[in-house]
Picture (cartoon, rainbow, N blue to C red):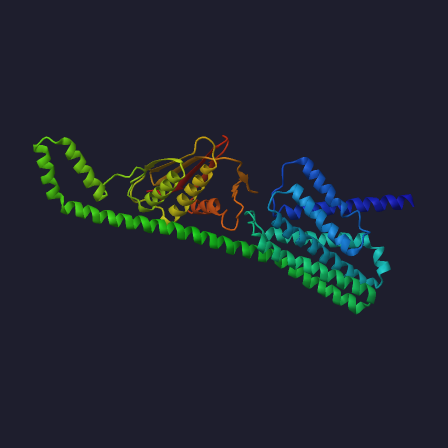
Length: 434
């Protein structure tokens, strides 16, 4: 008897260890693990409790399992609450469907619930092995790219699918237990497979929704930046017309200047020349005047925006009028970098500043953007940076978009944030070598 009890306890410990391994493997696909060891131990302990107290009523057992799993995920992993809810309830639903299906397969062969109870350990092991296969398949679907967050409204809608599946499957199980017929067991097993497939589709739906939202946000970014380029083009056209007017009136202006010079009225000459430059739009830009419409328009726009917010803005642009990089890509890169810099500098402490330097050398473009910031930077699962805004639906695609644009030119992006309050990003774009 003692040997049987020791053997039974040992089997239970191994099954709990297997369950913990499945828990960590599953949620590590979607979330970044926190660095706190104490929180990790406490979270694992809470999750293990669900495999110990299994003698509760069905609904209470299901509810306790979901709540304990959610508490463990909150302690162990970083991420949004609603995103955790979606994947926790999907985790519980899929596990429940697999265990129910395994139980019905055993029940079809053995025929009695009493006989099934003696094979509970084997059934639990088989269901965990099937769940491990599902997790391995999910790892192939969800690549190393960051799993993007969905708004709370979308998350709530997705949560309804596994919650409904759990409710339906639990009622079918109780009904089948009362009927106890082979046909009912077979039909229940088929229902379990269908519900399992529906819950696995949640991950595909999640990816599709996230991709659609990202596409909308990127489209909005492109639209905004194209509007900036169009505005700058209109300004250039107006400037050309003004210069034509100045040339047309040049003879009369020179006559006036000559008259002032003959009388020695230097102050009036200076005032008259300034009036001509102001009226003709001949003042040299205080920011940049490289001749590149895309770059000049973006820097000019964010310079004006920074001035309105009381942010010090300096630019050192040493590039030719034409560069071997697409204007759309330059819009995306510079637009996102400067937008992030302006927003970060607003929260800085004493000194709010932005500094941008660009240099073109041997068909290669170097971009340096340095800015002040306040608060803490939020890291992602791949050591990148994530948006700190609450509205992740309309934000959070800036830097990933920059990385993709830079990758088109086999470029590099390096971030330096070791000094508190100072953020520096370096970008190198490689053009075709002559």
